[in-house]
Length: 137
Image (cartoon, rainbow, N blue to C red; front, side, top):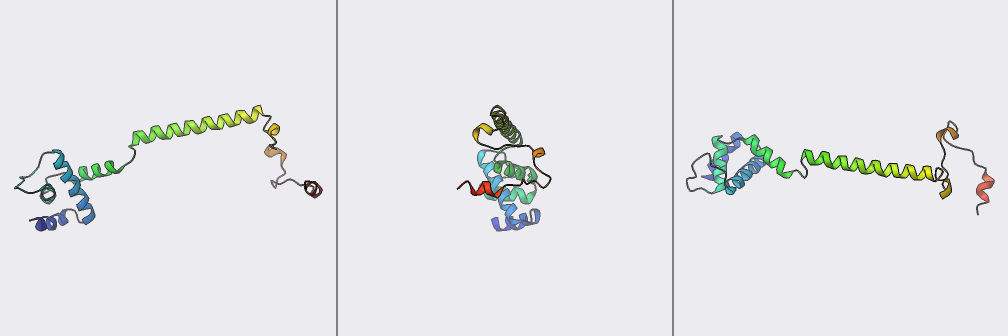
């Protein structure tokens, strides 16, 4: 009986992979206690699920949405909260670094040479005396 049911289902859901996922999800729902839309006729849950798909007595889109929601790691609300927390943390870190450099006279006391874009010529490079570089040995 299942072979005839699968052939009937292919007409309703042409993609075999999608058919297997939908029937499997429906069979699990039946196992958990959801009401049947057709008579069981002593069939197992996967066969009943296929027969329901063939008879079009269930909402395939609702089942497929359930599959997608089950595979998602975060729902939309959790994702918003996570992204807000991450952006707040990044903002706090940047504020802490900025205040550190301001308190450190723009990092000069820590040995950094911090400048502004106004101090650099239009090419973005500064001329360096080659003798200064040679003396560092």
